[in-house]
Length: 212
Image (cartoon, rainbow, N blue to C red):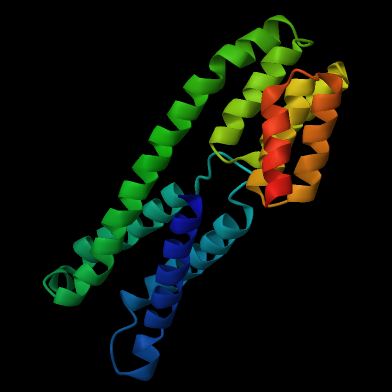
């Protein structure tokens, strides 16, 4: 979903940045077009950032910031350029604003779901920082939200506390497989299976990679 949001912001950012040049090409008033420049620039930057680093963080506040900027433009036009509100062109940026708002609300629900999901493991870690099972389960939960670097940090913490933590090694393999790094994933599956010969999931995952 994050990549979709980033792509959407990138497209509308380019559109509005180009749209801000309209008065320079015609005799139109600079207001409200001048406001499209910072709005377009922000959306381009945030769109690129989200597409490049969407796996680094579970939550990114860019959609809310974009919505606030958009709100400022709309409020300014409504208060100081009321005649422009009646122009059909006004809806060119009202519609994307509604979409941005919907995406921001979705992000908020997502972060609440994430916080609820990891809370039991964070409480367990707080009670016992050396609880490798809690670290591993927290990482597996984070991985479900596709924040893979953060998930791997949790798995590595579990392995640091217990180098023979087969489940954490297996889960690193799962993440690497999701990222398309099959050879590295196979290495971790094999290590997990060596540490725990009865680890059926590690064995099946390794066999699946070999069959590809």
